[in-house]
Figure 1 (tube, one colour):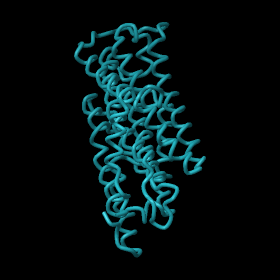
Figure 2 (cartoon, rainbow, N blue to C red):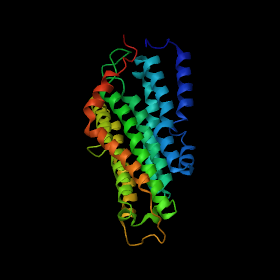
Figure 3 (cartoon, rainbow, N blue to C red):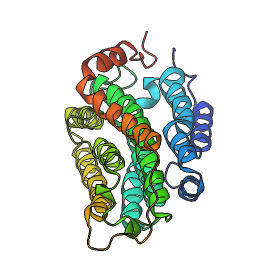
Figure 4 (cartoon, rainbow, N blue to C red):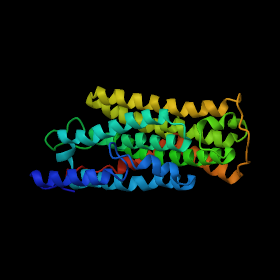
Length: 300
């Protein structure tokens, strides 16, 4: 693209379109609909909603900001708005996830938090040399943001499917009800754990590389506030994932009733979780392809 026309009217149009589109991926503070909707849906529906459906509007926002408006907007102070909304999503979504007793609602609030990283990307997307609309896009920010979207899709789908298997086994959607369940459905436990560490950015998962690239972009800009936010977000994610895993491993209060989970349910979740980890182990090819897709940001 060659960038949008100058003047206040195109910027007002961009702001209105961004706010409208931000409601679909439940960007903070427009996130109120997502946790109850994703928590109430059947586990396969929640997996599809969180992994794919909310990403559609994000794709349109990327095309608007990067291809239509370009560096004239991405290098301007106004780009902090989606970044700050993303920061609010990371902190608020993580804090709310830590407070939940419903397993699916915890994962739904995790989705609110993890989608925040996709919008933090916008605040880091213009390279440090991009002043007044010159320069280019930061390859680390671009690759890290898109890779995080891909990793989140597989990891979060695995976590929702694993949560569905746990709830099916004990007939309750309650973290306290899954006490000691890890030794009964180990593949489901492993799937949830692998998906969780991928979202937390633990190596060698795809989430680790995605967050590392975003951190690299923040360090390159000397933006220490974003560095602290990205590191804190990973720690908060690890906190609510370990909370669930701790209950699943605790065998002091086993469930009174237990239903055998069909193997196909366990294998589906585990396959998606392994894919999230494989994205980190096979990251070279993915990063190369994302680099080739790096837009010019309106720069000829």
